[in-house]
Length: 273
Image (cartoon, rainbow, N blue to C red; front, side, top):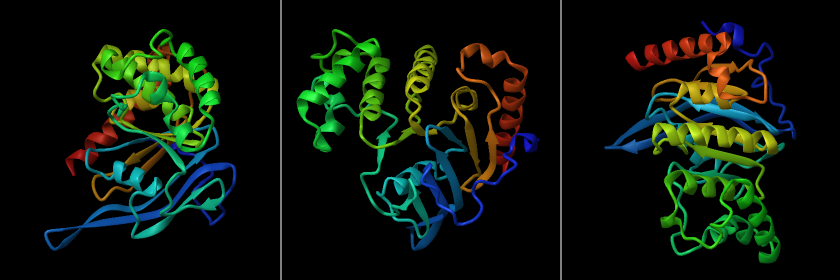
């Protein structure tokens, strides 16, 4: 089992809301009405993301992970529970996270540069300053020369880079990524994982990441929350005891392989229920 990898100090305990925590979700419950009955989706979910930490959520399809994102982003009100960011309660409030969905969701009528600066525009950053920063980052992520191109001219992986860059340059501290690589082929997905690792390790933004891919979660994360079947609750909290910077060679590390086996077995057992 995974007990040896569970943090000894339960960071979810108590009612202290530290300003050093980019996110603290406490005892979230949510049900939706369906055909005259309540469908319970989330059951007592609590989790944290420290400043500069990369945290992943893994669990079966339909266990409420995306609903949790909507609650964190203020799009859905929980039945009970609280959402705190940087020591302040923000339950039900919008505009506190940067969100990247499964699809790139780029505006087809805007150039790559104009897509990248969208969040900064909305927050009131001057276009001159936003464009200067965007051009620097577009070059850093290997898209130099595509500043004035339109999304339909880029490959799927390139579009995902643009979408992530837009999230990265937004003023909000917390970036929520909802299975951003799920629609990509295996080779492109592997390239994007390496790319995301390099960019994240350079910037250390606070990230909450949804994935069904256990290997992806282990490669990218500092900590993993394993969700149960619906109604989603936290089955295990696993610290990933692997050094940074991370590289793909770590997938052959004995600790990595042991964790992958144990998490896979846990997931299989949960899916049988």
